[in-house]
Image 1 (cartoon, rainbow, N blue to C red):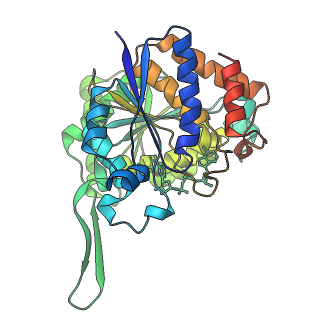
Image 2: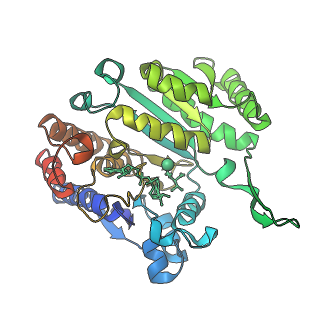
Image 3: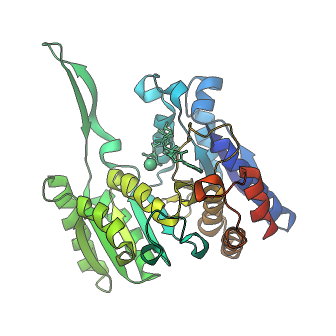
Length: 354
Ligand code: NAD
Ligand code: IPM
Ligand code: MN
């Protein structure tokens, strides 16, 4: 049966990098993949066309597809928009609407890029970390939230970090299951030294491990220490489990270990059988948008993750990843990796491997 991939190109460099992933999907379709590729408005582009970042129609189409590939959202032109109508709110709404509570962010350093990182080769060569970031809870979603003006004229801003046992267990289960396919080790990050909800996170993760995953080696690390350890000796980590906020920050940090933020793909998944949301971890990069120089690798690698986790084509996922690796081995580089190729030319180099 034909599977459906819904593209949400979004804003800034989002459409530029998604165009390359679309060409890769087109090549696989020409080679026999039974896939229909569709597109819908999202983010700032949807605000401009429809007044809201996520229309009911786009959410319905996302839920009806097998996989969604998002580009990036946001930009200065929408930054003065009221908070809940900004492009970023549309992305949070899409994640919640699709119930994709586990965000897999693999930080893998391709051999050809061991010199592209700002860290020395010896620390990043062979690096292969998998972040499992909780994606639909925590401080990005908790209430109360908002800004109020106090009687004395000051403003008071509030966001609430909140998790329940089941929210922690379902994402931890995914981390433990994935660890079983890797080294059987998980490090969980929180701030249990100063946050009650952080200590509870630690206790719930440990209790689940003790009850259901005695074969997994679980350790806990305070998130500030983890930020330091990631640049001190990153290869100590295999699977890292985090809440929504710490996972957002630590995965951007880890991206630099792989050479560029433009290299990191992600897969947001939920309960089995439901569509997944695939997206580069980078944003809309307003500083380079429109110049055709963005690195498309994260988008293409996100397509590979969609092939693996939602489109039932793991062999094609391997093939796409191998094509990215071959392009890098041949010396193809966008400016963020120290090269001079345009986004489209980097796409040509990847397609050459398919
Ligand atoms: P960003 O990730 O857009 O950019 C950070 C830096 O990395 C910039 O210098 C940028 O040029 C560079 N960069 C990012 N992706 C790149 C790529 N593929 N190739 C080459 N260089 C790349 O973060 P920001 O500037 O803090 O945020 C810009 C906007 O994007 C904001 O509105 C933010 O909310 C949004 N954002 C969206 C997402 C998303 O849609 N998933 C993620 C992060 C940020
Ligand atoms: C990311 C982004 C998003 C997040 C924003 C744009 C909502 O930073 O995907 O990493 O914070 O999750
Ligand atoms: Mn982020």
